[in-house]
Image (cartoon, rainbow, N blue to C red; front, side, top):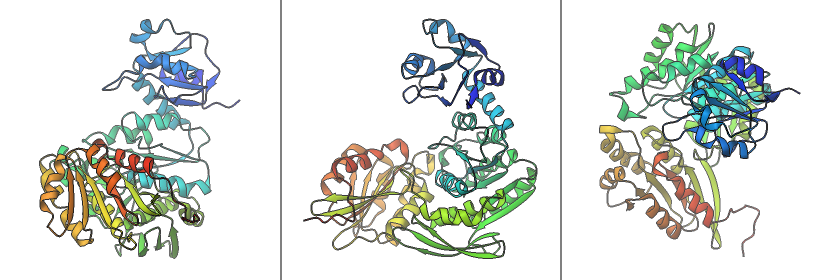
Length: 477
């Protein structure tokens, strides 16, 4: 049988000490005791809030066949009979296993960072590379100090293409992670005001994102947004880091991978891309110009990785929106239906504007309303009041006349909107959820957008729980 890791290879890679009767190997790695299954190893990572060692028993009960634990915690785990690999530090052991996974792999690797669009682009890359070979990509937004090594450690040896997302909210976070990943292609989607409270300027954010160049493999590629104001800054940073090949994507005339034309609708987009001496018509089964721009970057990466571009173009026709990042639901209400656009996973000024533009592209039928349901953008620091108030401009430009708000920072937007806009404001997310459940009407289009920490996913969940899915084939009496 072929395993993801044999127990011996795991122990050797991590510098660990086997304890008990080892299984021959494992076929999965998890740090979550709740979702672990048989033939999987549980890594008892100590986090900021919880210590995985406290959940070792639950992991065993749920089927874990092997535990990776700290030497210091071993005495407290003596009653467990499951085999263990004992290490000095579990997170560092996971990193070492990730390094071993990267070293044994012959996969072509792409890494994505940026202020907006990381996860969506990562999922696009998964979709467009799958016709060309076996793809291994991060689940959800596993892009931090444990998510990246975990994704690496989970990478099967026979992977053809690896797709990694690398995030940060402080300087010096990307640098160590990209040196683990060692990508052949590094993409920066864009530079915008995300985590602005932790930086003094957008240039500092750009410098932190540019850390991704430091891990690019010799002969590798950087792929940059030519339409972003920080293109020249990033171009110079990539050169300084020794990246051999620097490419651009976007609408700019000098972009090597160019978005030549865009035609968007409420449900999808058609774009024309120009690169390699060819112009291709590309249908994308997801709406939004920001999605189209990232699709061009994804196709550029396919080309740079040597994968099948024509097959990738076809694959974009089956692209599915990611939960919390533009996923659409058509829901029954009374004798009709309404549309829910779930953008609840995260928010910053740039992604807010993109989501508002998406709402504007989704017309409400009959007497239905286009409603922006917005919550606080977190980590804006001293800039918070200003960036929230400035959302009034794109809302007015989009013609959105109904705005439902929650959160203390959204007071600034409430106060900035004119009387011509129908504004509902609640201090708490839960109160706005209750309001939305009773005030939504047939033919409305609701777009829900906020930073993850505000809990706006509860609004989406409440609407999905109360209102069943509507299918176009149904005939409502």
